[in-house]
Amino acid sequence: MPAILGPRLAREEVGSLLVTEGWDEYRLLDMGEGEKLERYGALTVIRPEPQAMGPRRLAPSVWAAAGAAFTGDVEEDGPGRWRTEPGIGTSWEMRVMDLPVVCQLTAFRHVGIFAEQIAHWAWMSERLKAHRGPEKPKLLNLFGYTGIASLIAAEAGAEVTHVDASKKSVAWGRENQALAGLDAAPIRWIVDDAVKFAEREVRRGKSYDGILLDPPRFGRGPDGEVWSLEADLPHLLDLTRQILAPGPSFAVLTAYAIRASFLSIHEITADLLGHRRGTIASGELAVRETGDPERPGRLLATSMFSRFIGA
Image 1 (tube, rainbow, N blue to C red):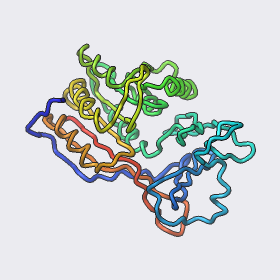
Image 2: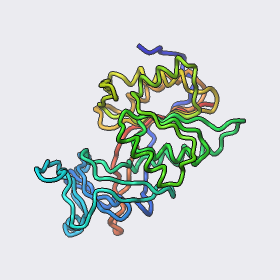
Image 3: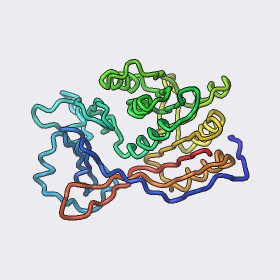
Image 4: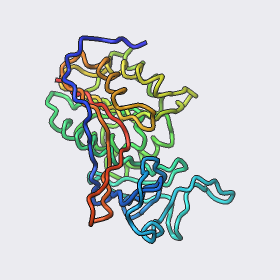
């Protein structure tokens, strides 16, 4: 069990809402009836979205014109899962904070980018650029997926350690690195179980100026390790506490698809990091719908977050 420290010294901000309005290369166009219509670069896609419970606003013809729609079906001849229009491939490029990245139609309905995370990425980039010290700031990106956050951090001046259990995701991240022209950037790409890696870093006495944690609800490590967010998050946050550098460092946790309030991850974060001076802000990430210019865009909640900013 992790050590529960106290008393809490950090200032606590509960109920923050971070909204992504979209950018030139990404838009949430419409949502409703359990699905969402989004544009990633030049491709418009339809994907399932349980939180899109209201009616659709755009005409059926707009939805029908989407280049790809996730069906969940498995076809005998072909990859299945996605229905695509003629001439639509399974991968394409778009830009995120001026960095070109590769998107793909994956079997798990994702396309390689969680657009709402740009609220964290832009904030992280500004903090890293403002870092003052004799050495580059060090960032640890656990569950780093396709490496977009790692590339943004490296471009902002950080030495990055990127950890993901999936060889395919790490290879995707390297592809994004090459596409962005950041081959010389100081990024270590590591295929490993996040908990095991963090445990070794504790034993080595390593520390980081920033730590990103973006865990799935369930997952498996490269050697069959089982990850359960509800069961394993307290231990991982305790490890985070031990390797997060003192002073003005930061840690960002995002949690998806769990049956819990953001208060749950706030209280865990506050128990384990709140003994340090700083601020703990927790709440939800959301994306604003922009497809109907005649009406204010609705908000789609996507995930919960908790940020610790040391003082």
